[in-house]
Amino acid sequence: MPDWKRNLYILWIGLFLNHLAYTLSVPFFPLFLEHDLGIGRGLEAWSGISISISFLISGLCAPFWGSLADRFGSKPMLVRSGVGLGLAHLANYFVYDPFSFILVRIFQGLMAGFSPAALTLVGSRTPEKHVGYALGVISTSTAAGSILGPLAGGALAHGVGLRGCFIASGIITLIAAALVLAVKEVRERRAPVRQSVLQDIRRAAATPGLPAVYALILTVSTSVLIIEPLLTIYVVRIGAAAKDAALSSGIVFSAVGAATVIMGPYWGKAGGRIGYSKTLFIGLLGGGIGSLLQAFVQNIAGFALLRFGYGLFFAAVYPAMNALVVQYADKDFRGRAVSLSQSASQFGIVAGPLLGGLLGGWTGIPFIFILTGIALLGAAWYVKAGKLA
Image (cartoon, rainbow, N blue to C red; front, side, top):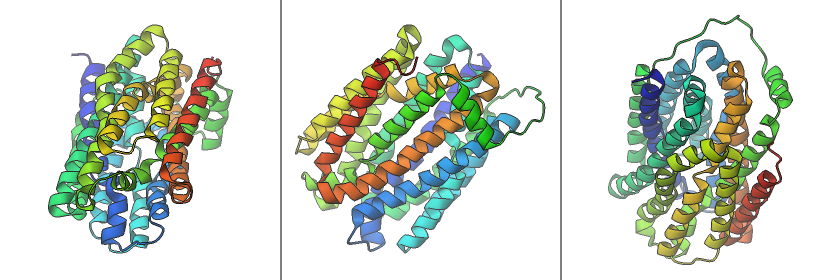
């Protein structure tokens, strides 16, 4: 078996476990804040802050970790992040007030970087003709984790409580860190040139195509994650019993992941065949329409079904954007280019939950779905207009 394919399989499992651990507990932060940490008023805002703060720190640190990945390899970054994230998950078990919880989330942001390191290794060490396929396949790993994580977390929380989810998340993430030790990465001898983050940004800005992709990643991440802190709350409001909220929310969260597992490889191959810009347009168009429709469904079964349909199209979006970053960046710059794209994504993930948490309590959650749909349709127009060319 070629090394690139062997690495792909190992990293698929590692990313699957990493995202499984993440979605085992994070979707239920609003319930943890309310029932375990005593947050009553401003629950939407606290939920948004608890999710956003980790991604803010992660986005600030991503260029630094990307630079180290280019100098020393992506494999050490995978191990560093896996161990650090595992310890952060375990630390949540010992939290009993919201401010300590935020401190742990900050530490979690410092330790982030598992996904960009895996994407960099796959994108840089895969033959060009197989890059689209490999990135499409690797996208299904996080999607598969998104299926099982919320379902397992909902069942586990229902049985042993939310703190048990944190222990399980920590153990699973540490297993993922151990697994990636089997990855093979041949390092090329390079001159020991250390560029600053500012120089990396300037180089990215001067690379045709990259600034447009980064702008798109920022917009898409913001519009998608704006609903993240509100889904669990919304599921309860449209009919889920409070005692079954974690399990019902887990099913809804899993719908998009299930759709991505089904369609991810197809969209990856289609991008290599017809062009990543075209598959990106289709994904954004379908995702935008799906988001608009979700604003008008008021029962759990219909809402979960619409989330699944939305996921069938949106499965094309992130693999296409990642492939475009790899395609536009020079080979010696790919690690830093992917990390800068991760920064753009993280800043969107910061802005999204914060906006969602604030707007959700002010305008109502259905309005957030409409806002998301409009943003995704605007991004589709941006791609169709040839701004990525």
